[in-house]
Image 1 (cartoon, one colour):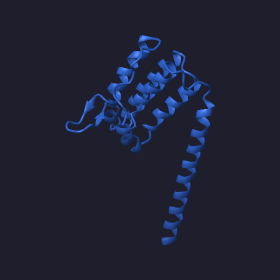
Image 2 (image 1 turned 60 degrees about the horizontal axis):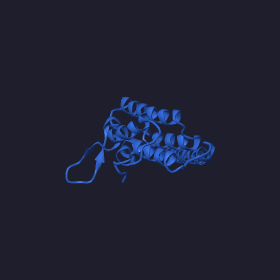
Image 3 (image 1 turned 135 degrees about the horizontal axis):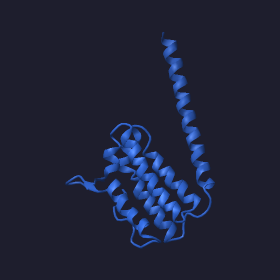
Image 4 (image 1 turned 90 degrees about the vertical axis):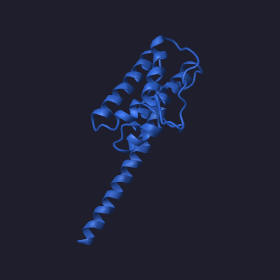
Length: 156
């Protein structure tokens, strides 16, 4: 489970430091009493069809753009975009919003980049494996759909 406390070390600008507070609001602001479960506005807004996903993607996009304007590498931006996209998957993304905590992961990646010097380089070393995985998933979905269609048409 992602921790609510994200940045211990100040980074380059106050704008980036404020992203940690925004990530907490989106991912871990509220808790369910008696449990260790935390959730934020991302999980709640994501339940509103269309508008919810659009608004949470806008917040993620804002966070990513601030980090990119402050020197995030292509590899870092690509990883952040992938984190944000996972929450935008219809239905499945709503469940992931409660556990995945994309904004918190993105701020943690940002800290690793600026403070620890990690996640350097271009975007292709991150995007190419992600694209290959997505192609395999889409191919699998198409294969299952074709198999179901053939089964249904064989029944009638």
